[in-house]
Image (cartoon, rainbow, N blue to C red):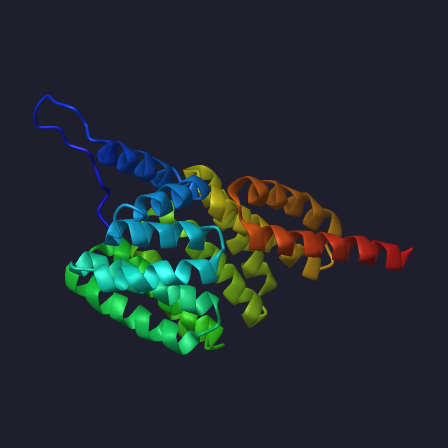
Length: 260
């Protein structure tokens, strides 16, 4: 989706609607999804436009509030007009349905998104479409197929966007039983998130690495990473990650008590 900018061609008063959109856009681009959610939902009371609906949906999704994001994404689909609009909303809907466990519906939207992205020819968006299909096949336990799409995604992807795919590859290698490769990918995801300031993704990546260490009975390493993840999750409003991290930390305490 194209970044919105405010252009002034003559001197005059900037409308309050333009100022509000600029504030919403600033929060959204900065990854402050709690603020952008509130801002776009407020904007929706004035105008139920594609942009307001789509970005409200993304903001909620990025806070792991998937069920709440779905109605906004569904309505945004009805408001879509351009190929760019359809491509991004199909990708969002596919990801929401996948996260909610409806893989068949996710696949339909992912394929629609990929078809459009290939027509548009944007390499970054094509990489996202391939990454989405990788997550679909991973959910179906078709690991080699998932690996194929993740590798395709990386070949198109900007360096600043690779953290998510590294994290997905780590999950895949866990499923394939390659523990060494999984840890390597988790660490690459974290390094990428830190390098490019992808704060919300960093919280998820650290949470996943902490859970990985727990499953390897590496409890001290797990605690260190999980407390870092918990701090990020609380600041970024990642409720599901916060709950999952707290659960694993509780399990570590229980394991240590059992061994005494």
